[in-house]
Structures are given as structure tokens and as C-alpha cells.
Length: 190
Image (cartoon, rainbow, N blue to C red):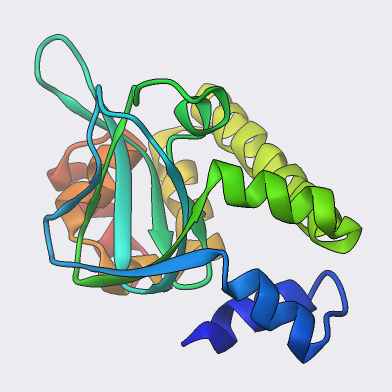
């Protein structure tokens, strides 16, 4: 399973077996059940999570109890409440498992230690953060400028696997549409 992390790192930097073993020694493996919380709003957020297997969702619950999905996470993706993780503060979002999931957990302290000791790992994390920032900007711009059908088409184009793993009502919530609207998009794209 750790090969998934090794492959992701190797896309950005070259790393020896010994270096990878050292990096991996700073992670903790955890398995989560379907619907189990990884992070709950109001709790501390000690880890960034690398997804080995499974599917997760991060979301914010508003004052009316409505869930607003911020992102999904699948194999080979990272997920956490980054505000709480980097600021060592309480979570403002929740993350739970859409399906049984296996994660590698990296504490903030271990991340900082690795980055201080290994310039190439610091470079890896900087590149991953840059990609996340670009994806976040693209999502915000899409929310502001695209209609519902355009958002759906873009999501389908970028992440076709998501539609195989995530229930339709969650995709509808992510896009900010009703399930009926999503069903119309599904039938019109066949």
C-alpha cells in the first residue's frame, strides 16, 4: 500500500529506498469504517491524511444544519482541515468516510521535521500545496462563473472516478444542485 505514496512522491522528486523508508516511518497507518469521522468540527486536527484506499468528503455544516461539501478525497489524494492543521487550531469542517478507507496520517510536527531535514521533501510538499492552491482557485472561479450544467460537466471531465464512488446526492450537494437536477444532467449526457 505504501507504494501509492512512493509513486506520488516519485512524480515530483527522486527518492532512494532508504529515504522513502525514513519518510514513511513518520506516518501512521489507520483504517476507517464507512461513515466514520476522520475529523469533526470543533476538534483538534493533528494530521494531514494521505488516502491509500477509499473515498472521503470534507464539509461544513451551516447554522441551519445544511451540509456544504467542500471536497472529496480518493486514492492518492491528501485531505485535512488545512486551516486547523497549519494553525494548530480547532477544526472548522468535518471529514468522514463515504466508504471504508485506509489512510496514512502525518502529524504537523513530523511534517515540519521531515521538511527541515530533507530539502527534497520540503520541495515535494511545496509543489503539492501549489497544486492544491490552483485547484481551490479553479473551484472558486467555477462556483462564481459557471452554471450548474457547466460545473457538472467540468467535474465529470476532471474526476470521472468520483461518479463511480460517490452517491448522487453527495455530488448534487457538492455542485449546489438538487438530486433531480443532477439526474437531468445524467440523462442528457448519455
